[in-house]
Length: 224
Ligand code: MD3
Ligand code: FE
Image (tube, rainbow, N blue to C red; front, side):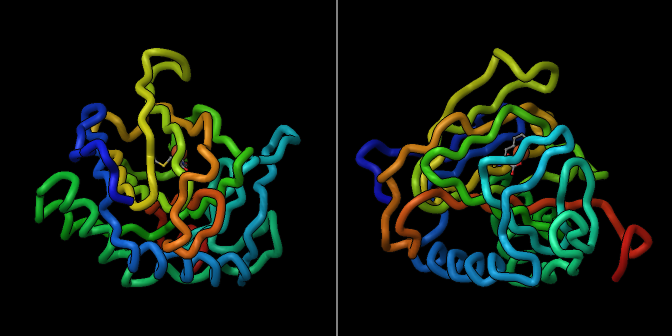
């Protein structure tokens, strides 16, 4: 995406850094290809069931560890029982590059080893309500990559799911890193802006969001 209005890297909140247009078209295409393959299995993409009977509007596939509310496991016991795909080394390297770009701290970036990615696909009607990501046992940053249609992304505060919050637009190729005091802030996606994606990414419609995380889990929590 080449915006008419310049969108420089911005610290939206302490530790929350937005880097517009970080991924090249070729990198976005490669990520779309990888996500399409993961979406077919071993654990196919699906809408996650919520404990109280609802179902999420986004469609999710996980790599490294399988997430469901409110736990990680190696096998997708709420889907087909199979072990999720391994977290690839190239994605660890991409995560480290992302951290270096956002914070400029090489030692921190080199020490960053994400072990899970949650891949969410949003159709034009999908939303994500305000929530905190706190199923990880360690406070390492979350790296978010967006591809396809733009969305309104809302970053709030750590105390309540309501105001004060800041709305920003996340577009195709954007990097967002959430660390420090913002790591446990409430956040959500109130709206996808249909028709804003570029088919050159390989995604004809909808929005893909990849979040890399460090679970803090080990072999003792469910396998190698
Ligand atoms: C702010 N995804 O998968 S990514 C999620 O755009 C999720 O699909 C959104 O929230 C999406 O859980 C937002 C950016 C993000 C990720 C983790 C955060 C923002 C965050 C953790 C704390 C605060
Ligand atoms: Fe989240």
